Structures are given as structure tokens and as C-alpha cells.
Length: 146
Image 1 (cartoon, helix red, strand yellow):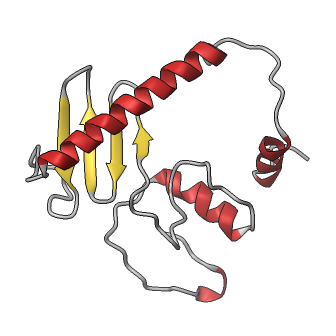
Image 2 (cartoon, one colour):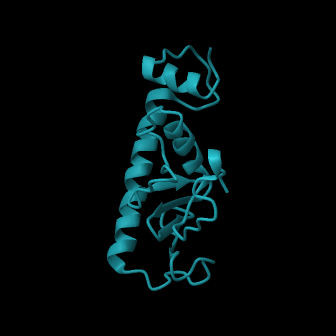
């Protein structure tokens, strides 16, 4: 739940699946700071086709009402969140084209993650990082920098 100043939009209920990653883009946009490159949607103006990834041991991706969970190199589950919000029925009647699209997104995300790992190494490695002005602006917006 989010409470807007002045009680605006009180009582609204939305059925679109949301995630905690949607909070930062919403609050940043509300504060007037661009958050276009962050994962997640502005909760006030959802872009339902944005892919949202999460997880470490297993990975999940949500695009609109379609969700895929990859638990290994080839093991996956797919759900239609509109018709199966409890994720009870693996497959949930999901169109094969949609499962193929989710698998492709997983592959692209994995490839991108490996490229980042090769560039920056493990998060346990330490070293000096030079931030761009835009990155500095974002950290200031969150209160991490003065």
C-alpha cells in the first residue's frame, strides 16, 4: 500500500502483479528524479511489458501477467498470474509463444549478468569505483550522498 499526499487515489485497487522493485521508481518519479533505467514500474503509470527479474538461486521474470521461474539451466515453471494468481498450475494455460519469450528473456538476462561479472567481478571484491554524475544524482536522491 502507498498513501499519497492529500489522500489522492485512496481506495484504488489494481489487479496487475506488482513487485517491491516498483517502489523505488515510483518514489523517485514522484520526487522528480528520472528512474528510467531502474527495474520496475512507476506504480502510478505501469508499463506492463517491462520484464522484472529477481532471485539468486532461482530466477523469476514477470512480463505483464506472465511469470516464469527458472530453477536450473533447463528446469522452469510458467504461470498466468491473471488466471492463476496463486501460481498453483505450472503452465497455467500459458501460450507456448509466451513461454518461449520468457525463456529468451532469461537467456538474455543471464548473458548480460555474465558480461557484468566479467567486467566488474564478484560483489565480494572491493576496489575504487568512479561514478558518473547521473549515478551520483541517484545516490543523492536516495540520501546516500550529500
